[in-house]
Length: 432
Image (tube, rainbow, N blue to C red):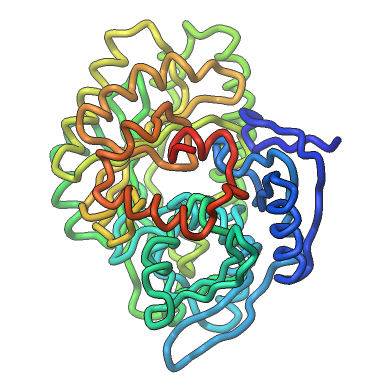
């Protein structure tokens, strides 16, 4: 049978059946068949989750024929797209329409269903996650029913299903609130630890979006601020500079050097010290999605936790201290972002402003000891793990972290009573 694996190569599965539905009716048929057989069905995306959240057990549905924008409402400023659309495709189509999403993360390979179901987010702004920009959706439930949810029709489903983990149904369409196309000016500045952390709160308060990277075993950080421009008169990086910085240095050379340092871990601190000192400031501007997103060709593993905003800098300092006390050697920077609170039940920012710490390792490095060192620190600060990134949490200890956890489980019982959409990951984080 054909094997499924995620992008990082960390998770794999061997589905017994593989289908590429071309419409909602085909999805309904697959769900009804699985329910009758007592088996399971899972729509996979592009595999950019590091967990096995979308790993298929029996029937795997692929969204290759379910992409593109279906409708645009310029008066309401909403756009409806098929849930299998990749974010990079949506961004390009929105730009052609003179429209844009408000915010997004820095990877654009995911499908809309996969990105929203796991709570994919950016930093800053009024709405940080893609899920918080959803105002309507359609899904196929575990009984084969096609449900439409908006702010006026089945609002309780919309309320909970915006971050649904793939446990409530197969998403078929998503409707997003959009904005007129806008541009961002990006300013990237190397800073010392004390300078970056000392000015962190003021920086986050005065810029639209702030993304910060700390290089382990060093005192250096790279701070990126993105601010809206009044018009679309942009000054993007020259093509050669973009290729040199973002393709060659950040991907080709970084990947090659990781292969060397993985073989000789003792060289990693010196490698980080030298490479972080070579970072240079740069300023450029472009339409929003080309500033928010960047290519990621080097394969890695990632764990990310959201702690309450007020605990963030303390958690970061404790993470650094723990790493420095250990004998671990880490090449990848730690990414630091903040988000405003949203009202989504299983959102990592649900009900609280949040501070995110993302820990990465190269694909060929052993991530387990590093993540095991960091996870208790994040948990001690009431951290919530990103659903699509590595963590060890279970339903028993996740329930206290989410005030509306029981409400989500009740909706799952209603929409998927036979657990047609279950897999080992969902059984671990939600229970049977």
